[in-house]
Image 1 (cartoon, rainbow, N blue to C red):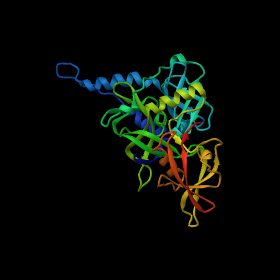
Image 2 (image 1 turned 90 degrees about the vertical axis):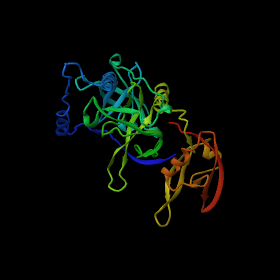
Image 3 (image 1 turned 120 degrees about the vertical axis):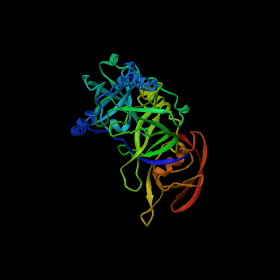
Image 4 (image 1 turned 60 degrees about the vertical axis):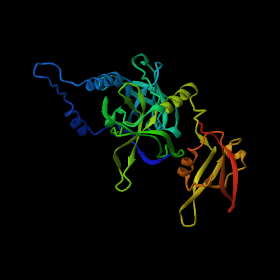
Amino acid sequence: MSSVLSRYSHARPALALLAAAALVLAVVAACTSSKPNGAAANPPLQGVYETTITRLLPSVVEITAGSATGSGVVFDRRGDIVTNAHVVGTVKKFKVRISASSHPMNARLVGLFTPDDLAVIRVIHGASDLKPVHWANSAKAYVGAIVLAMGSPYGLTDSVTQGIVSATGRTVTAPAIGGHQPTIIVNAVQTSAPINPGNSGGALVLLSGYVLGMPTLNAEDPELGGQAPGIGFAIPSNTVVNIGRQLIRNGKVTKSDRASLEIKGETHVNELRKPNGVTVVAAKPGGAAADAGIRPGDMIAGIAGQATSDIAALENALVRYRPGERVKLQMQRDGNPRQVTVKLGNISS
């Protein structure tokens, strides 16, 4: 399973680049072509595009969170909207717009789960105006499928870009959210559809009209830095639905299906100031690490022979396992190496 370092297609400041917006809007004038006899010349595929966009755009909303904007997807008829946790940030109250011409609706936070970069907000009034989407089975995603990325990049509501599914099953490391552990997106859908700042939390849509995932990240250019064109990632729909339902039902996640040591850790550096492990700051009482005898101050150096030089490496190593599996940890206590077997727990809120 590959691991990719990415950066968020983050929420943009609400004061978007108006000049850029005007420039983009000037290019959207539609052209119609016709055959010499006056019959419509539009190919069948164009009709599919038009139908999909017309049907789905009202279900992809713009979210204003404080001074930033992002996107969201209508989840149900009760007014619940799923989005990225990094779009929500630390804000508890939001403004939601269905389109550029609609009046903003007030919304509140239902819950968020930073390990998967997901959150749910709920409109306070006007739920009947929202139209839920239908979710695809992301386990059946395949390379080459045409997809449309819908959202509100740069504050431009009702924006659409197109591309294909470039790869499936990616493991993507993202920046930490608000001081939490690094976000690791499992089974991410890679797409060539441009994902611009503000697209976060929107919809990656198949031409069938079903939502395959939530655009969230762009790859970084390893040499030049900044966004790598044509390489974006979406959280798979199966993860969005699973986590979204739990947040709506409980306000938190109790079963993420992702393995955890159930510790709070920090990267350890050696005398050369190079990372060489993860120091346990706290171990959840009755949790996986604590039950294996691991205690604060211990340093985890590897899992099943795979080095874990920092927090991100540890989280990436755990992605390979499921809750309940037993793994061998290489660690140090007071400078002395030792090995323990741990029955893995479950990442939860």
